[in-house]
Length: 291
Image (cartoon, rainbow, N blue to C red; front, top):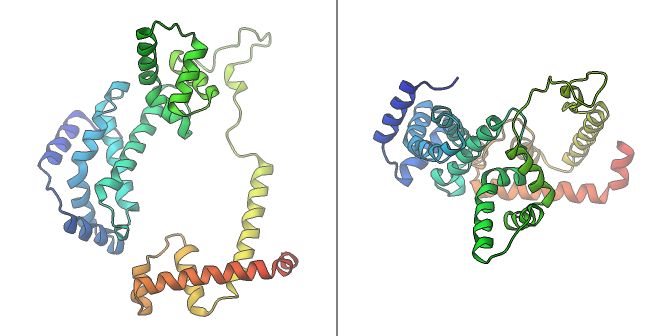
């Protein structure tokens, strides 16, 4: 649900008055949320950096999206960052959060730019947010040198400058230049009166690919199960808790339970993976027969 103007104004005022966290306090809050799911710590961390989220959201106003919605998406990106942030990596939360905020707002802008998707790959995103700026720069440079560029030459230069395939540039140029039309409109060239929506490819996974993927996943699970037999009980526990459960545990929490240092748990984890790999390589024929 989009924020209304009053909510947005209140949020902005709160962000401006929010405390500035030093590195130590930020780290304590991050640990409290990650290890204890302390909602008070999360709220304090989010509030402190909402100013950053609003500032980044404002940079996307030129794409025509309502500022309220941009702020909301930036806030969602900030929350995702807090949920995925690992304080053990030694990186400031603000540095980590910038990527998530930007990604969240960019995705929103692209989803709402047109009724027809403008693309979601990294090259398409790069083009969407940089193409017109690069195009204007290249046209100015060509004008200064007296060079006349046709559309194809200009697109080639844009592709080189942005570092994407020429085909992507031509496709994005058409999408940004065109206007939306109803997918329920009848195709002018079709005598049977079919609508454009009937020509769209079904985005759902093909049945054969789904079956193949499920088969591959089962084989992978079987391989892991066989390789786990090469480990002792403690190594199996570490691998299972670190890689095979829905919410993997941290080295620190495992160390506390096992009475080991975080570094020692990391060493045991690496050694266990090494044993599994060697076992699979040594017994490749046996594994195939088992499967």
